[in-house]
Structure formats: structure tokens, C-alpha cells
Image 1: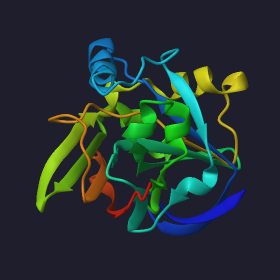
Image 2: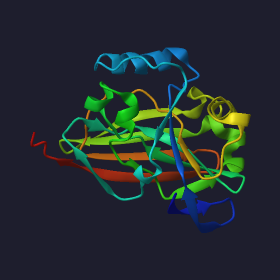
Image 3: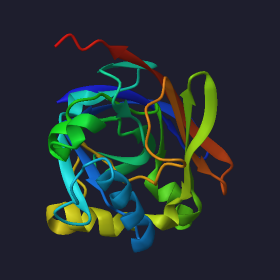
Length: 228
């Protein structure tokens, strides 16, 4: 178990809250749109990555891979980020944020499960209460930007109506259909515009167009040399 401190941004106040997290789940292939889902699967197949055993699928990774730092270190130049909404359970409540499932694509071709453990998973330090946004969940927007050779480009963008509903995602992944306290779950991603590729920096956000607010975070990618 390890602690991360967040700012809970409610409709009428902001409150700091330290959450103990003991389980990290990375949900994959969570799209409602099977065409878009299969596009992302095909995108990875082109890189030699096998199709998933099931859709959706729930990978486990160390909770200590979660980070709120503004940079991460990765071995070699084969990793890349992807924006996802993040759910965190605490004392019967569920909070919503966003993060990047940064993944080593070279290792992913060998084993998706192993690749999920290879890189830190940056998360934004702001969370919303799920109950505050569930009524307009499908209207919320995930977006990411990649800075590649000095140029910042739109990398991913889509509304959450493309993803499985939260209740469905939880019911399929957890016994009894209840999201456990101390759990953090990444909820899936969108295909990359122009294809998956590494970047020097990755910025991501979750926009709530109804309540007029946005959660943002970004991080630099420091590449460590591979000596053999």
C-alpha cells in the first residue's frame, strides 16, 4: 500500500485528501464502439503485439508505479503514453481523474502484462467525485498532446461515450460489481492520431464541458541508454 495526495475538486470547494492505494488495474479494450476498438487492436498488431485474450481485459501492475511527478525515466526509446480516465476507490466513494498508461512498446510485443509493469504511470493530482459527473459522463472528453522533436501535436481525443459505462466496467472486472477501496483503475484509451509513436513530452487532460472544468497533467520522458 502507498499514499498519494490529491486535490478533490467538488462543485463548491476544493479539499486535499491523501488516499492509500494498494491495487492498480489497467483495463484494456474497453471501447463501446467495436470498430474503434478493433482499429486500436490492429494498430498494435502492426507492431507485432498479439490480440488480447478477452475484451475488456484487466491487467495488474504495481500501485507504486503511479506518480504525480513531471518527468519519468524509461529505458530506450520505445515507450509512449496514452491518456485514460482513472477511477480511485476510497471509503465507499469513487473519484475520477486522468492519467497516462505509459507503456514500453517493445516489451509489449513480448508480453502486454509485463509491459504494464515497465513504466511509471503518471496521474494528475486533481480528482472529481464520480457522483458529480456520472449524469453527463458520456460528454466528458479525454485529450492528449505529444511533443515530438520540438513540435506539440494533438495525439488523442475522444468523448467517454466511446468507452464502456463505468458500472459495466466495474461489474466485469471486480467480484460483486463493487469497486474496492484502495483500488486505482485506468479505464481505456483511444487510437493515436497518426499512429503510436514515442514523444519527448506527453500532456493529457480530462475535460468536463458541462461543469466547465478540466483536469490536466504533463510529463517529460527521460530516455535512459541501453548499454547491452
